[in-house]
Image (cartoon, rainbow, N blue to C red; front, side):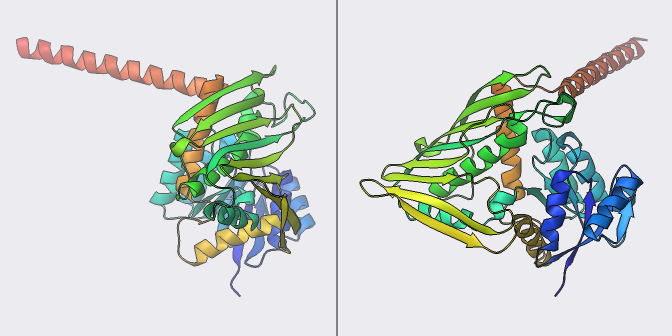
Length: 370
């Protein structure tokens, strides 16, 4: 059986989870790992029996044994390494969110198109079989017409100002770290109810609480979709909440508690369905597959089929989700310092371009008059 040869860009905790998933996948094998430190790369390689260890990401991208890369750097660096991987001819599975903002995500997607590589955002939850069960329940109108979706992913992390979850320079805060999950699943549910692959909100409202590093400790949003479907989203890295998704319809409700990292090493996930006027029913979805292995195999299947989009997480869906997150942050008033600097540079460039144009026009008039 053909297997996809993976290279890992970065060696953090999520890279370890993905490496374990690939080891338990059907269609993948670990070929190489890259780190900013040769020592860290060698230690990671030894832990997961990876044949090639590289002391830089550039070396990893130059490795001819690597067909596809999994990028798990902090998300402000995602777009940069997606572009570099695409230029190196490597297919890319990039950890969520795919970029810091929608313009960066667009640049990453364009690089993938230009260099004809497969690009997927790593929402492993979208690859779990409970998703299809949930979509079938909605399509069959078991709870009638979907009217309200409540999705919460929030926890209270130990505060470390320089840590990824809280550091402004690393794109910290609840919206981008875990709010992205609530957005992608609510958009999928609303889309399914409307007979579409996903739905784009026509209106996004939000509020958030800032912590001392200038990022959102916890935040909430209300999304309005066509057909009168609403979604209430809540996310946080400094507030423990009841996590999961509840879907209210005209004829009942569906609850999926603790669904964001379902059965990480295989196992069961329970959905609770309660049609109006009836007892709540429990539906069990069970799989022996490891969660991150399901993600790796979804990517490999699409690639081996010659596709440049993965059905479980299409790139157009990713771009729309990123735009939704931008609108949520805009409603909250969250702009990262790096974005402010980029906006400032762009303004300076526009001013310089206008001044050059005015100077050229003035020179032209003088030349004509002489």
